[in-house]
Length: 387
Image 1 (cartoon, rainbow, N blue to C red):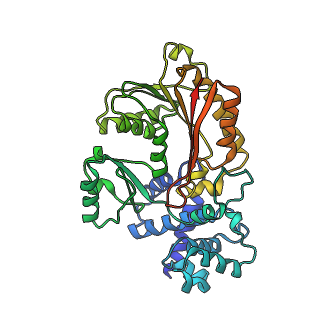
Image 2: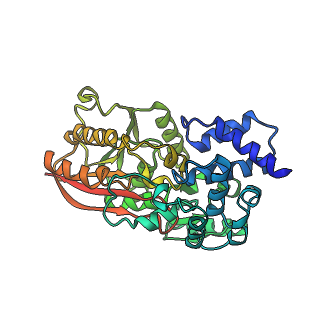
Image 3: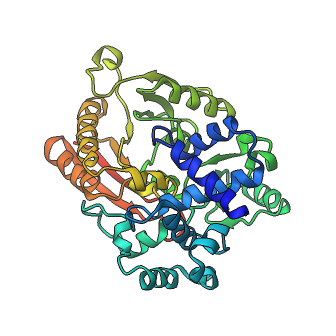
């Protein structure tokens, strides 16, 4: 039976995953190593493994295939062979709203608790609707792109002509179904940047001026650096990260975007960097801090499944130490933009309170950007001014 083929493929993918790589990267490598899998097999295996992890820690005592049948029912509106075979009572309800489906699972499995999907006791940041957030974890977030205002009508028309459903969220932001093959539709990658809508909204806190000198100190592959450059093309920029590979990706993205006037340095922000930065003074610092990433777990549900809560304390130590080490390179009266993609208060408001207490900073404004209502990530951002 075909369903047994689906079960076997899922079990093999699940057994192969150890959490060392992001799931999407692991699947790319796995499918290259198992070329006998056709496109349909790859598509179903990907769907199953993502659905499985979206159930988080709920019903963890059940066999994997039974958990998968429940998870796939909750995460999708079309019926899979595994759900039909293993959880047949759910077949007629697969197209119902998520709240009805949750209630049905609870009626069939009295031990099921929605809170077990995200069983972390750390307090959530201000304004989080926990129920809405938990329900959002069963939904694949959208793909968002940032475009120049003048290019948006053309790009939107091209996407729609290719049959892509497009939502225009702002003059510069489009939302697309996840998995859209952008590079096959828009061949000039200089026309857009892939960036979550909540991440784009952090730019409202930057407020750069022409000829300012800014430091993106945890630049990774350069999303925030590209964002600040889109806000003010004449800003001077230093991008740094502890990972050389990330800076290599950043350079490729900058070249594609046509940006040439920037510096990049490999810097470990936990060390004394006076020899590298002794003469630098910045008009602004972007600190997109290492964090739990809890606001992105709808996009990376393997982290929802694998994360250990004690790691939050380790991230908090990193966040405080990095902020303390970079603040001396910021000019007086200028902003430190502190950001995380976490929804935990310990990484957000409590770190800000610590920085206000320990460092010569005053808070101008801060916000938890809630993405769970519009199929996006959630992010925290604070604008702190050096006294």
